[in-house]
Every structure is written in structure tokens, then in C-alpha cells.
Image (cartoon, rainbow, N blue to C red):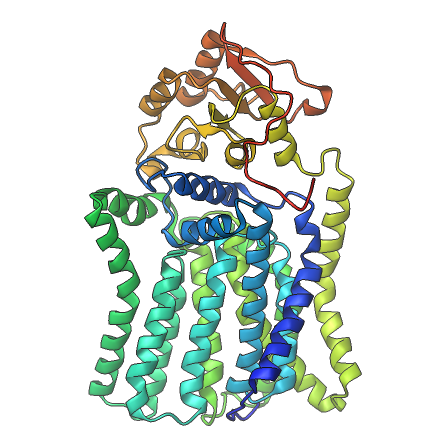
Length: 527
């Protein structure tokens, strides 16, 4: 085990370190600038943020059950770039590079090993190339906050801080994760795991009840502050009820099988399948630390705090990943950072026995990142040779050929990205149609009534995935198909869209064809 020491870094060294990680991250993520990598979630973030910049009200005019932070991030990037998707991809890359930098600081400051920090930092970007992290999902933006909070707690122990700095540590820890909470609520599990572990470690260091009370009070004040400010803003603008439903009630309705306990075999299968992406990290960590534990039943009491914090972090991240019971890969992105820390420490221990020359460090690092880079290269190759490399952009171009800008349309079974890319206006306050068509009760939506409101507005164009709803024998599917049959006419599209896209225009109200207009947001630098 490494003995924790205080490890400083000059501003010049920190700047060079960050520039190297930015370059490494951008090289790895370069293909994402030329192929569609945004999921349905990111398409929704772009759509809502773009409409908010045009005056739409979050949770009232456009609805989702995510907190405000992710929309503020997307909106800021769109505003500063003049509406460029490229800016969002770049922002995601910067967030990942910043996370890698902080992981390096964990290796240096918490564990006293520059080599371990280098391994942790350069391992992280390759493991953020898949599992839904290839675009700009919410996890990409809140993980830096989590890593920073671990660094704050770990630094308290390794710098021999006294009790007077405990309140400052509690305030910093609370504020960092309070801000992260406004990006995604699943951060609660990592917050709880880290906070309880930190308190236990303090108690083991002879902290008294008064010390722990001060820590708790300072943490709660800072942690709740961002949420209270958001609530105050919505209250001043008369929309507190909309915020409370979307942020507090709907997430509870969304969770059908908490932690997958109702389906334990499915939980086990899901964990193995998704965590297998991190197999090299888990394997080297298990081999090295398992061997140490077999020789010594328990970690030494001296210097245990950093390891305890990282272990609690990993446990909290896993609880967050399985908390909703949903089979979604991107929930497991949060495992990458703590696993990179453990793998970096294990690799450092191996290299210490091997001599630790730079070329050996590079070889171990290359070996550990081969697994994710293999998937990255093969998926990039397949996307580059796909029939339509950027289907969302191509679909948006097709929509623009059949409707003028700012036309109210309805998108079903396709990414909400089609709204901003085509320059069209959602004909519903639920631009993510899944809220209406698949799990409306989880979002408090009266789906039949909402569908009638939508079609009463007579959206000029309806875009669906191929054959959407024709094989659904439920009220929602039948209702949509009935409206399409009664009020709409299918548009004849080119053969390349067979099996991918269907467009319908209002019967007897065919809109003038637009040869070319650019009402949508920019997808530069791609022409």
C-alpha cells in the first residue's frame, strides 16, 4: 500500500498536465464529431435547452423529470456557440478531461504516487468512449463533481488537517455534491456512501459528537443550498408546483423495481453484462488487492482512510447504477472513475515490483486500455461504413424538405433531436414521446388526453420510426394509428429510408416543399 503524503503541483505543471489530458481526450473522441452519438436523452436535452433559449418555460411548456442543471449546461453551450451541437460534444470532452485531471490529483495527493495518478488519469478517457458516455450524457457532466468531492475528503486526511478545517471540508463537500444533484439525482447514493464513511473515519480518529454535528450541519447547509435556490426561483415565477412534481414526485413513480430486488436474477445478469466493459480494471484490482488481503486479513489501520473512501465511492456508484431497476447502460458510466483509481493503484503496485521504468508504465497502461479501445475502433468502423453515417442529421434534412421553419410537428419513435436539427417546433410539451407512448403513468401523464390535445392542434407533420405502432395492440398505439389514418397522408420517401423513417402530412394541407432552409441548430464542423 502507498503511504499517503502531501503532494504539491505547480501551476505550470498543472497546466501542462491538463493540456496533455485535453489533447488525449479530444484525439480519442474525434470520431464523435462526425457521426451521431447522441442518445434519446441527449436529444431531449438539446431540444429543451434550445427551446428555453427561445423563451420556453422548463417543466411547463416543455417537460422532463431531470433537474435543471443539465439544461443549464446545454443551454449555456448552445448560447455561447450560437447553437452548435459541436460545442456540446466539446463540452463533454472538456468535462471528461477535467475528471481525468482530478483523478490524477487523487493518485498524487491521496495516495502519494505520481505514477498511480498518471495511470488513473490516462485510463479514464478510454473508458468513457462507450456505455452511453460517447455523447454528452448527464453522467459525463456530474462525474467531475463526484471526483472533486472525493479529493476534498481525502485531502483532509492526508494533509493532517485539524478539527478547525472540518467545517470548511463539510461546506466544500456539500456544495460540490449539491451542485451535482442539480444535474442528476442519482448522485444521492454516492453522497450518502462518502458522507457516512467520512464520518465513520473521523469517529475512528477520536472525533466527538460535537465534531460530527458540525460536519453534518455544514454539509447540509451547503448541500441543500443549490436546491433551495432553484426552488426559490421557481416559486418567484409561480411555477413551484411544476418543479416539485417533475423533480420529486415523478422520479419516485419512475422507479418500478428499486435496486432490482424484485428480480434478483435479472439484477445479477444486468450487473455482469454491463460491468464487463470494465473487466480489465476489475481484474487487475482484484488480483493485486486480493493477493494482499490473502496475506493480511485486514488493511493496516495507518493510511486506511483513502482506500475506505474509494471503496465507499465505488459502492455508492453501484447503488446509484442499479437504484432505478432500469436496464440502461449509461447508469453504469459512474463506475469508471472509482475503478480507474483502484486499477491505477494496483498497476502501480505491480510496476513497483517490476522496476517501474517509464516504458513498463506505458506498456501496462496500453494493456489496460486495449479493451475499450477495441470496442471504440470497431464501433467507429461500423458507423463510418453505415448506409447513413449521421441519420439524425439526414432525417432532419428530409423533414426540412417538407415543411418551412418553425412548423409544429410531432416526432414519435425517433430522437427528439429532430426538432432542433430541423428547426421545427414540438407540437407537445413532451418532446420525448416515450413519456406519452410507453410509460405515461411513470410521468403522471394522462396519455389519451395528451394525444387528443396534440392532434387537436393539427401538427403539420408527423415523423415516426418505420411501422411505429402497427404491431401494438394497446390504447396508445391504436389511438395514434387512428389519427394518422384519418387526418394524415404518408409522404413518399426515398428507398434509403425504408425501415428507418416515415413522414405524414395533414390531409388536404400539404405544405410547400422547401428546397433548402437552415432553420435548425448547427451541426458544424460537419457540412
